[in-house]
Length: 317
Ligand code: KDG
Image 1: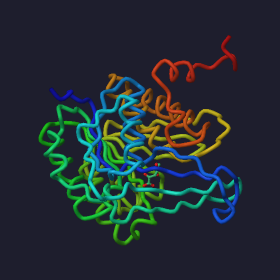
Image 2: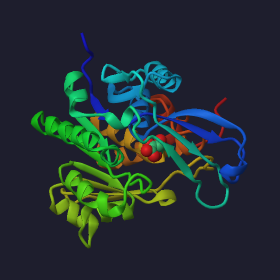
Image 3: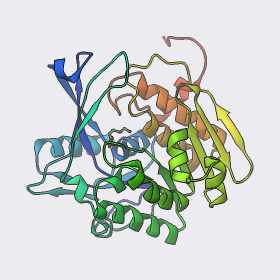
């Protein structure tokens, strides 16, 4: 009997090979393997916070796909919607580590198992499975026409079930151009209840001069602007305008902060918390992730998050 879910997401799980040494990828000789992928990170973040999360995805029948599946299972994410595709490759990214300037990411995911996601994967795994919340990102629609169709089918199902839809814009310029992305992101954003992104992403997804006002006018109920080290700001159709600072943190690896934020935000909203508390849970999860290597390793459990959000002694003995 398949488990009923709280949150469903869909997207491409990846293996990330992260350079151990700093500097150019050309000089990096040692890499550490991490499980990654925005929606995978989110599902693991939710599971750690005690939310029943499932992912619809495809991985290859290679060791990387096995590593991803093992990790998802170990974290308590429902993988009934994950198909292992014979003969297809699991998506891979390689990332350098720089203390100065942005770190370059190489994708090896063209034609990957994950990019072959289609609406049939959603139907075949039982649709929304009772989930009250669907989370999608702007990465999956960039992978292929069938992956975009899967995202749209998932939103259709969520709308039919009156489930909340969140959309993290997550523009990936290495996957598609802004000109290709804009009409798709705008279409998806307008169908969401919650839209999250940095100011540039929201501008693209809104297509209006005042991005946040434009999205709210289009029917989005909550728009969350990610302001990096300055924290996050949320505006809602109820007239709320809330800003929460990011906790001070020594960032070791900035990637994954956005997914962690979404996990904290969604978990809080499902717990019945207001938008301000949801922002606090979100920034707490984001800060916890950037303080360690990898996209998921620092994701907190619920008791850990509560402890981290309490001000006070720097050591608990
Ligand atoms: O948000 C983190 C993701 O960017 C990372 O895990 C890799 O999903 C990824 C992507 O497509 O860039």
